[in-house]
Length: 69
Image (cartoon, rainbow, N blue to C red; front, side, top):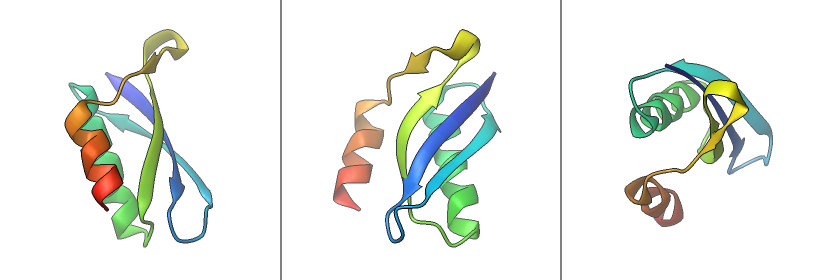
């Protein structure tokens, strides 16, 4: 499935978004963070958008990682 990951750079508050192909939401979030890090972005994921523009919940462990960072 292709997810649209929408977020924000923690340092500059610049919006960030990118399509990510993954089998589940947590994998898509991890891939997005990896891509953003390679671009020098400290990504905070604001939303994961799936099929038919449905906003999907982030897994609890991913939310905890964002708060700890």
